[in-house]
Amino acid sequence: MAVPSVARRASSRVGRISLAKLLSAVIWMLGVGGLIVTLVLWSRQRFADPTVTFVTGPVLVGEMIVALAYASVGWLLASVRSGNPIGWLFLGMGTVTAIQLPVILLAGDAGQAPDAVPAGALIGAWLASSAHLPFVGTLGILAFLVFPDGRFVGRRWALAAWSAAIGAVAVSFAMALSPGRLLWYPTLANPYAAPAWTTPLLWTIGVAGGVLFVSGLLAAGLSMVVRYQRATQRGRLQLRWIAFAVVLLTLTAAPFLTVRYVMEVPYEVASLLAAGLVMAAGALPLAAAIAVLRYRLLDIDLIINRTLVYVSLSAILGGLLAASSAVSQRIFVALTGDTSDIAIVLATLVVAGAFTPIQRAVQGVADRYVKPAGAATADAAPIPPAASAPATAASPPSAAEGAAPAELNVMLRPILARLDQLEGRIAEVEPKRPAPRSPSAPPPGEAT
Image (tube, rainbow, N blue to C red; front, side, top):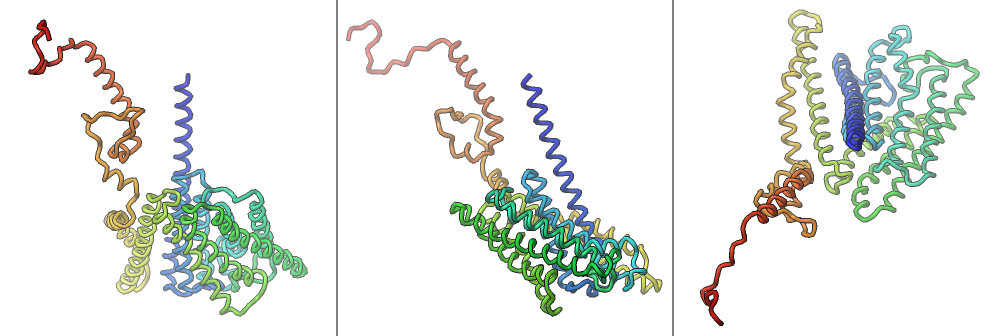
Protein backbone atom coordinates (compact mmCIF):
# COMPACT_ATOMS: atom_id res chain seq x y z
CA MET A 1 0.00 0.00 0.00
CA ALA A 2 3.05 2.26 0.03
CA VAL A 3 2.98 2.83 -3.72
CA PRO A 4 -0.51 4.41 -3.83
CA SER A 5 0.43 6.61 -0.85
CA VAL A 6 3.55 7.85 -2.64
CA ALA A 7 1.53 8.39 -5.82
CA ARG A 8 -1.07 10.43 -3.94
CA ARG A 9 1.61 12.61 -2.35
CA ALA A 10 3.31 13.10 -5.71
CA SER A 11 0.04 14.02 -7.46
CA SER A 12 -0.83 16.44 -4.64
CA ARG A 13 2.58 18.09 -4.94
CA VAL A 14 2.21 18.39 -8.72
CA GLY A 15 -1.24 19.91 -8.22
CA ARG A 16 0.10 22.53 -5.82
CA ILE A 17 2.96 23.39 -8.17
CA SER A 18 0.63 23.70 -11.14
CA LEU A 19 -1.78 25.87 -9.15
CA ALA A 20 1.07 28.16 -8.05
CA LYS A 21 2.30 28.53 -11.62
CA LEU A 22 -1.20 29.22 -12.90
CA LEU A 23 -2.00 31.76 -10.18
CA SER A 24 1.31 33.60 -10.55
CA ALA A 25 0.90 33.72 -14.33
CA VAL A 26 -2.63 35.16 -14.03
CA ILE A 27 -1.48 37.85 -11.59
CA TRP A 28 1.48 38.71 -13.81
CA MET A 29 -0.77 39.03 -16.86
CA LEU A 30 -3.00 41.43 -14.92
CA GLY A 31 0.02 43.61 -14.28
CA VAL A 32 1.17 43.49 -17.89
CA GLY A 33 -2.37 44.28 -19.00
CA GLY A 34 -2.38 47.33 -16.75
CA LEU A 35 0.87 48.54 -18.32
CA ILE A 36 -0.49 48.05 -21.84
CA VAL A 37 -3.64 50.01 -20.97
CA THR A 38 -1.43 52.73 -19.51
CA LEU A 39 0.56 53.02 -22.73
CA VAL A 40 -2.58 53.18 -24.86
CA LEU A 41 -4.22 55.84 -22.68
CA TRP A 42 -1.05 57.88 -22.47
CA SER A 43 -0.58 57.77 -26.24
CA ARG A 44 -4.09 59.17 -26.66
CA GLN A 45 -3.10 62.04 -24.37
CA ARG A 46 0.00 62.63 -26.54
CA PHE A 47 2.24 61.63 -23.59
CA ALA A 48 1.47 64.76 -21.60
CA ASP A 49 2.37 65.01 -17.91
CA PRO A 50 -0.30 63.43 -15.67
CA THR A 51 -2.34 65.54 -13.28
CA VAL A 52 -1.39 63.47 -10.23
CA THR A 53 0.80 65.09 -7.58
CA PHE A 54 4.60 64.69 -7.94
CA VAL A 55 4.25 62.48 -11.05
CA THR A 56 5.74 63.85 -14.26
CA GLY A 57 6.29 62.06 -17.56
CA PRO A 58 9.75 60.64 -16.66
CA VAL A 59 8.50 59.54 -13.23
CA LEU A 60 5.57 57.73 -14.86
CA VAL A 61 7.96 55.91 -17.21
CA GLY A 62 10.10 54.96 -14.21
CA GLU A 63 7.06 53.62 -12.38
CA MET A 64 6.14 51.48 -15.38
CA ILE A 65 9.64 49.99 -15.61
CA VAL A 66 9.78 49.33 -11.85
CA ALA A 67 6.32 47.72 -11.87
CA LEU A 68 7.27 45.47 -14.76
CA ALA A 69 10.56 44.46 -13.11
CA TYR A 70 8.97 43.58 -9.77
CA ALA A 71 6.05 41.74 -11.36
CA SER A 72 8.30 39.69 -13.64
CA VAL A 73 10.81 38.75 -10.94
CA GLY A 74 7.96 37.92 -8.57
CA TRP A 75 6.19 35.80 -11.18
CA LEU A 76 9.26 33.70 -11.87
CA LEU A 77 10.13 33.28 -8.19
CA ALA A 78 6.54 32.38 -7.26
CA SER A 79 6.22 29.87 -10.08
CA VAL A 80 9.55 28.16 -9.36
CA ARG A 81 9.68 28.48 -5.56
CA SER A 82 6.09 28.88 -4.49
CA GLY A 83 6.90 28.18 -0.84
CA ASN A 84 9.07 31.29 -0.54
CA PRO A 85 6.94 34.41 0.08
CA ILE A 86 9.48 36.71 -1.61
CA GLY A 87 8.13 35.92 -5.08
CA TRP A 88 4.52 36.58 -4.10
CA LEU A 89 5.44 39.83 -2.35
CA PHE A 90 7.34 41.11 -5.38
CA LEU A 91 4.53 40.00 -7.67
CA GLY A 92 1.96 41.86 -5.57
CA MET A 93 4.05 45.04 -5.48
CA GLY A 94 4.55 45.10 -9.24
CA THR A 95 1.00 44.13 -10.20
CA VAL A 96 -0.74 46.59 -7.85
CA THR A 97 1.50 49.40 -9.08
CA ALA A 98 0.82 48.49 -12.71
CA ILE A 99 -2.95 48.35 -12.19
CA GLN A 100 -3.16 51.76 -10.52
CA LEU A 101 -1.24 53.53 -13.29
CA PRO A 102 -4.22 53.69 -15.71
CA VAL A 103 -6.22 55.36 -12.94
CA ILE A 104 -3.83 58.31 -13.09
CA LEU A 105 -4.53 58.82 -16.77
CA LEU A 106 -8.26 58.08 -16.60
CA ALA A 107 -8.81 60.60 -13.81
CA GLY A 108 -6.83 63.25 -15.67
CA ASP A 109 -8.49 62.52 -19.00
CA ALA A 110 -12.03 62.70 -17.61
CA GLY A 111 -11.89 66.25 -16.37
CA GLN A 112 -11.35 68.40 -13.34
CA ALA A 113 -14.69 68.08 -11.50
CA PRO A 114 -15.94 64.89 -9.81
CA ASP A 115 -19.17 65.05 -11.80
CA ALA A 116 -17.21 64.72 -15.07
CA VAL A 117 -15.25 61.66 -13.90
CA PRO A 118 -16.84 58.22 -14.42
CA ALA A 119 -17.80 56.43 -11.22
CA GLY A 120 -15.26 53.67 -11.76
CA ALA A 121 -12.40 56.09 -12.39
CA LEU A 122 -13.37 58.21 -9.37
CA ILE A 123 -13.47 55.19 -7.05
CA GLY A 124 -10.16 54.00 -8.50
CA ALA A 125 -8.60 57.40 -7.87
CA TRP A 126 -9.95 57.39 -4.31
CA LEU A 127 -8.50 53.90 -3.63
CA ALA A 128 -5.17 54.72 -5.27
CA SER A 129 -4.85 57.98 -3.36
CA SER A 130 -5.76 56.39 -0.04
CA ALA A 131 -4.28 52.89 -0.02
CA HIS A 132 -1.85 52.28 -2.91
CA LEU A 133 1.40 53.55 -1.42
CA PRO A 134 0.72 52.23 2.13
CA PHE A 135 -0.24 48.80 0.77
CA VAL A 136 2.73 48.48 -1.61
CA GLY A 137 5.03 49.86 1.07
CA THR A 138 3.85 47.22 3.55
CA LEU A 139 4.57 44.45 1.04
CA GLY A 140 8.02 45.91 0.46
CA ILE A 141 8.79 46.15 4.18
CA LEU A 142 7.72 42.53 4.68
CA ALA A 143 9.92 41.49 1.75
CA PHE A 144 12.91 43.28 3.31
CA LEU A 145 12.31 41.54 6.62
CA VAL A 146 12.25 37.99 5.20
CA PHE A 147 14.63 38.31 2.24
CA PRO A 148 16.05 35.98 0.91
CA ASP A 149 15.02 32.76 2.73
CA GLY A 150 11.45 33.78 3.59
CA ARG A 151 12.05 33.90 7.38
CA PHE A 152 12.62 36.69 9.88
CA VAL A 153 16.07 37.17 11.38
CA GLY A 154 14.42 36.62 14.76
CA ARG A 155 10.95 36.47 16.23
CA ARG A 156 11.11 40.02 17.54
CA TRP A 157 11.61 41.37 14.03
CA ALA A 158 8.00 40.42 13.27
CA LEU A 159 7.02 43.47 15.34
CA ALA A 160 8.39 45.64 12.52
CA ALA A 161 5.96 44.01 10.09
CA TRP A 162 3.05 44.59 12.48
CA SER A 163 4.11 48.20 13.00
CA ALA A 164 4.17 48.80 9.25
CA ALA A 165 0.82 47.05 8.70
CA ILE A 166 -0.97 48.95 11.51
CA GLY A 167 0.55 52.23 10.34
CA ALA A 168 -0.54 51.55 6.76
CA VAL A 169 -4.13 50.89 7.86
CA ALA A 170 -4.19 54.07 9.95
CA VAL A 171 -2.78 56.21 7.12
CA SER A 172 -5.19 54.73 4.58
CA PHE A 173 -8.15 55.30 6.92
CA ALA A 174 -7.21 58.94 7.52
CA MET A 175 -6.62 59.64 3.83
CA ALA A 176 -9.82 57.89 2.74
CA LEU A 177 -12.04 60.08 4.95
CA SER A 178 -10.03 63.30 4.88
CA PRO A 179 -12.22 66.33 4.04
CA GLY A 180 -11.31 68.32 0.99
CA ARG A 181 -9.59 66.99 -2.09
CA LEU A 182 -7.77 63.73 -2.72
CA LEU A 183 -4.17 63.73 -1.58
CA TRP A 184 -2.69 62.43 -4.83
CA TYR A 185 -5.32 63.96 -7.12
CA PRO A 186 -5.72 67.59 -5.99
CA THR A 187 -8.12 68.35 -8.85
CA LEU A 188 -10.67 65.84 -7.52
CA ALA A 189 -12.77 66.22 -4.38
CA ASN A 190 -12.92 63.30 -1.97
CA PRO A 191 -16.19 61.47 -2.75
CA TYR A 192 -16.31 59.92 0.75
CA ALA A 193 -15.07 62.84 2.81
CA ALA A 194 -15.99 63.01 6.49
CA PRO A 195 -17.45 66.17 8.07
CA ALA A 196 -15.08 69.05 8.56
CA TRP A 197 -15.06 68.72 12.37
CA THR A 198 -13.24 65.37 12.07
CA THR A 199 -10.17 66.97 10.47
CA PRO A 200 -8.06 67.19 13.70
CA LEU A 201 -8.89 63.58 14.63
CA LEU A 202 -8.08 62.24 11.17
CA TRP A 203 -4.87 64.27 11.08
CA THR A 204 -3.78 62.76 14.41
CA ILE A 205 -4.56 59.23 13.18
CA GLY A 206 -2.64 59.86 9.97
CA VAL A 207 0.43 61.21 11.77
CA ALA A 208 0.46 58.30 14.24
CA GLY A 209 0.10 55.84 11.38
CA GLY A 210 2.89 57.54 9.45
CA VAL A 211 5.23 57.27 12.45
CA LEU A 212 4.46 53.55 12.84
CA PHE A 213 4.90 52.96 9.13
CA VAL A 214 8.25 54.77 8.90
CA SER A 215 9.43 52.96 12.05
CA GLY A 216 8.67 49.61 10.44
CA LEU A 217 10.52 50.70 7.31
CA LEU A 218 13.64 51.70 9.26
CA ALA A 219 13.51 48.44 11.22
CA ALA A 220 13.29 46.49 7.94
CA GLY A 221 16.41 48.19 6.64
CA LEU A 222 18.19 47.49 9.94
CA SER A 223 17.18 43.82 9.78
CA MET A 224 18.94 43.46 6.44
CA VAL A 225 22.10 44.90 8.00
CA VAL A 226 21.83 42.42 10.88
CA ARG A 227 21.26 39.53 8.47
CA TYR A 228 24.35 40.59 6.54
CA GLN A 229 26.46 40.69 9.70
CA ARG A 230 25.32 37.23 10.80
CA ALA A 231 25.88 35.63 7.40
CA THR A 232 28.88 33.54 6.42
CA GLN A 233 31.53 34.82 4.05
CA ARG A 234 29.70 33.36 1.04
CA GLY A 235 26.39 34.67 2.37
CA ARG A 236 27.83 38.16 2.71
CA LEU A 237 28.97 38.07 -0.89
CA GLN A 238 25.45 37.08 -1.91
CA LEU A 239 23.71 39.71 0.23
CA ARG A 240 26.11 42.60 -0.34
CA TRP A 241 24.26 44.15 -3.28
CA ILE A 242 20.84 43.29 -1.87
CA ALA A 243 21.65 44.95 1.45
CA PHE A 244 22.96 48.02 -0.35
CA ALA A 245 19.75 48.31 -2.42
CA VAL A 246 17.52 47.82 0.64
CA VAL A 247 19.38 50.46 2.66
CA LEU A 248 19.27 52.85 -0.31
CA LEU A 249 15.54 52.31 -0.75
CA THR A 250 14.97 52.81 2.97
CA LEU A 251 16.92 56.08 3.04
CA THR A 252 14.93 57.46 0.09
CA ALA A 253 11.49 56.14 1.09
CA ALA A 254 11.55 57.35 4.70
CA PRO A 255 11.93 61.09 3.85
CA PHE A 256 9.35 60.92 1.07
CA LEU A 257 6.75 59.17 3.25
CA THR A 258 7.39 61.72 5.98
CA VAL A 259 6.81 64.74 3.74
CA ARG A 260 3.85 63.05 2.04
CA TYR A 261 1.84 62.02 5.12
CA VAL A 262 3.30 63.86 8.12
CA MET A 263 4.65 67.28 7.12
CA GLU A 264 4.52 69.70 4.20
CA VAL A 265 7.51 70.87 2.17
CA PRO A 266 7.85 72.85 -1.07
CA TYR A 267 6.50 71.07 -4.12
CA GLU A 268 9.89 70.98 -5.87
CA VAL A 269 11.52 69.21 -2.91
CA ALA A 270 8.76 66.60 -2.76
CA SER A 271 8.99 66.02 -6.53
CA LEU A 272 12.74 65.44 -6.21
CA LEU A 273 12.20 62.96 -3.38
CA ALA A 274 9.58 61.13 -5.45
CA ALA A 275 11.96 60.77 -8.40
CA GLY A 276 14.69 59.51 -6.07
CA LEU A 277 12.31 56.94 -4.57
CA VAL A 278 11.43 55.56 -8.00
CA MET A 279 15.11 55.26 -8.95
CA ALA A 280 15.96 53.54 -5.66
CA ALA A 281 13.04 51.14 -6.07
CA GLY A 282 14.42 50.06 -9.44
CA ALA A 283 17.81 49.32 -7.85
CA LEU A 284 16.51 46.29 -5.93
CA PRO A 285 15.79 44.05 -8.97
CA LEU A 286 19.14 45.12 -10.44
CA ALA A 287 20.91 44.20 -7.20
CA ALA A 288 19.16 40.84 -7.17
CA ALA A 289 20.37 40.18 -10.71
CA ILE A 290 23.98 40.99 -9.75
CA ALA A 291 23.79 38.77 -6.66
CA VAL A 292 22.35 35.86 -8.62
CA LEU A 293 24.61 36.08 -11.64
CA ARG A 294 27.87 36.65 -9.79
CA TYR A 295 27.39 34.94 -6.44
CA ARG A 296 24.70 32.29 -7.19
CA LEU A 297 22.14 33.70 -4.77
CA LEU A 298 19.28 31.18 -4.45
CA ASP A 299 20.72 29.31 -7.49
CA ILE A 300 18.15 30.93 -9.79
CA ASP A 301 20.23 31.66 -12.87
CA LEU A 302 17.42 30.30 -15.02
CA ILE A 303 14.97 32.66 -13.31
CA ILE A 304 17.11 35.69 -14.09
CA ASN A 305 17.50 34.48 -17.67
CA ARG A 306 13.73 34.28 -18.10
CA THR A 307 13.26 37.59 -16.29
CA LEU A 308 15.55 39.39 -18.70
CA VAL A 309 13.74 37.79 -21.62
CA TYR A 310 10.20 38.59 -20.52
CA VAL A 311 10.93 42.04 -19.12
CA SER A 312 12.74 43.04 -22.32
CA LEU A 313 10.08 41.39 -24.47
CA SER A 314 7.24 43.13 -22.62
CA ALA A 315 8.97 46.52 -22.82
CA ILE A 316 9.72 46.13 -26.55
CA LEU A 317 6.22 44.94 -27.40
CA GLY A 318 4.65 47.66 -25.25
CA GLY A 319 6.69 50.35 -26.98
CA LEU A 320 5.91 48.83 -30.36
CA LEU A 321 2.18 48.80 -29.55
CA ALA A 322 2.22 52.43 -28.45
CA ALA A 323 4.22 53.54 -31.49
CA SER A 324 2.09 51.53 -33.91
CA SER A 325 -1.10 52.87 -32.36
CA ALA A 326 0.10 56.47 -32.58
CA VAL A 327 1.25 56.11 -36.21
CA SER A 328 -1.97 54.35 -37.22
CA GLN A 329 -4.09 57.04 -35.58
CA ARG A 330 -2.20 59.77 -37.42
CA ILE A 331 -2.65 57.95 -40.71
CA PHE A 332 -6.41 57.64 -40.11
CA VAL A 333 -6.65 61.29 -39.11
CA ALA A 334 -4.79 62.30 -42.27
CA LEU A 335 -7.03 60.12 -44.48
CA THR A 336 -10.44 60.48 -42.83
CA GLY A 337 -10.09 63.50 -40.57
CA ASP A 338 -11.00 61.54 -37.42
CA THR A 339 -9.56 58.82 -35.16
CA SER A 340 -10.68 55.21 -35.39
CA ASP A 341 -10.51 52.08 -33.25
CA ILE A 342 -9.28 50.21 -36.31
CA ALA A 343 -5.88 51.78 -35.69
CA ILE A 344 -5.62 49.97 -32.35
CA VAL A 345 -6.63 46.69 -34.03
CA LEU A 346 -3.95 47.13 -36.68
CA ALA A 347 -1.35 47.97 -34.03
CA THR A 348 -2.30 44.81 -32.12
CA LEU A 349 -1.89 42.71 -35.27
CA VAL A 350 1.56 44.21 -35.84
CA VAL A 351 2.62 43.32 -32.31
CA ALA A 352 1.21 39.79 -32.63
CA GLY A 353 3.14 39.23 -35.85
CA ALA A 354 6.39 40.53 -34.38
CA PHE A 355 6.13 38.53 -31.15
CA THR A 356 7.93 35.35 -32.24
CA PRO A 357 10.91 36.96 -34.05
CA ILE A 358 11.49 39.42 -31.21
CA GLN A 359 11.18 36.66 -28.60
CA ARG A 360 13.79 34.52 -30.37
CA ALA A 361 16.19 37.44 -30.73
CA VAL A 362 15.86 38.46 -27.07
CA GLN A 363 16.23 34.84 -25.94
CA GLY A 364 19.43 34.50 -27.97
CA VAL A 365 20.95 37.61 -26.41
CA ALA A 366 19.94 36.48 -22.90
CA ASP A 367 21.43 33.01 -23.41
CA ARG A 368 24.66 34.56 -24.65
CA TYR A 369 25.23 36.70 -21.56
CA VAL A 370 23.17 34.95 -18.85
CA LYS A 371 23.28 31.25 -19.64
CA PRO A 372 21.96 29.12 -16.78
CA ALA A 373 24.57 26.99 -15.03
CA GLY A 374 22.54 23.81 -15.49
CA ALA A 375 22.32 24.32 -19.25
CA ALA A 376 26.04 24.97 -19.50
CA THR A 377 26.83 21.85 -17.51
CA ALA A 378 24.52 19.72 -19.60
CA ASP A 379 26.10 20.95 -22.82
CA ALA A 380 29.65 20.51 -21.61
CA ALA A 381 29.34 17.14 -19.89
CA PRO A 382 29.29 14.10 -22.23
CA ILE A 383 27.24 11.06 -21.33
CA PRO A 384 29.50 8.19 -20.14
CA PRO A 385 29.73 5.35 -22.67
CA ALA A 386 27.85 2.15 -21.94
CA ALA A 387 31.03 0.06 -22.01
CA SER A 388 32.63 1.97 -19.15
CA ALA A 389 32.69 0.28 -15.79
CA PRO A 390 30.00 1.58 -13.44
CA ALA A 391 31.07 3.16 -10.20
CA THR A 392 30.33 1.00 -7.18
CA ALA A 393 29.36 2.19 -3.75
CA ALA A 394 32.96 1.92 -2.54
CA SER A 395 34.57 3.67 -5.50
CA PRO A 396 34.35 7.46 -5.99
CA PRO A 397 32.45 8.73 -9.05
CA SER A 398 34.45 9.67 -12.09
CA ALA A 399 34.72 13.23 -13.36
CA ALA A 400 32.40 12.56 -16.28
CA GLU A 401 29.81 10.93 -14.04
CA GLY A 402 29.99 13.79 -11.57
CA ALA A 403 29.47 16.28 -14.37
CA ALA A 404 26.46 14.42 -15.77
CA PRO A 405 23.04 15.43 -14.51
CA ALA A 406 21.93 13.75 -11.28
CA GLU A 407 18.71 12.55 -12.91
CA LEU A 408 20.70 10.62 -15.54
CA ASN A 409 22.79 8.86 -12.87
CA VAL A 410 19.64 7.83 -11.01
CA MET A 411 18.13 6.40 -14.21
CA LEU A 412 21.26 4.48 -15.24
CA ARG A 413 22.06 3.02 -11.80
CA PRO A 414 19.51 0.14 -11.85
CA ILE A 415 20.41 -0.70 -15.46
CA LEU A 416 24.11 -0.94 -14.66
CA ALA A 417 23.39 -3.00 -11.55
CA ARG A 418 21.35 -5.42 -13.66
CA LEU A 419 24.24 -5.74 -16.11
CA ASP A 420 26.55 -6.62 -13.22
CA GLN A 421 24.20 -9.41 -12.19
CA LEU A 422 24.06 -10.78 -15.74
CA GLU A 423 27.85 -10.77 -16.02
CA GLY A 424 28.09 -12.70 -12.76
CA ARG A 425 25.64 -15.35 -13.97
CA ILE A 426 27.45 -15.73 -17.29
CA ALA A 427 30.72 -16.22 -15.44
CA GLU A 428 29.15 -19.02 -13.36
CA VAL A 429 27.74 -20.88 -16.42
CA GLU A 430 30.82 -20.74 -18.65
CA PRO A 431 33.36 -23.65 -18.13
CA LYS A 432 36.58 -22.73 -16.52
CA ARG A 433 39.44 -22.70 -18.96
CA PRO A 434 42.98 -23.64 -17.86
CA ALA A 435 45.37 -20.82 -17.53
CA PRO A 436 47.84 -20.52 -20.42
CA ARG A 437 51.22 -22.25 -19.77
CA SER A 438 54.27 -20.08 -19.99
CA PRO A 439 57.08 -21.24 -22.36
CA SER A 440 59.55 -21.73 -19.51
CA ALA A 441 57.22 -23.92 -17.46
CA PRO A 442 57.80 -27.76 -17.67
CA PRO A 443 55.12 -29.96 -19.27
CA PRO A 444 52.54 -31.49 -16.98
CA GLY A 445 53.71 -34.74 -15.33
CA GLU A 446 57.44 -33.98 -15.59
CA ALA A 447 59.50 -33.65 -12.47
CA THR A 448 60.87 -30.32 -11.65
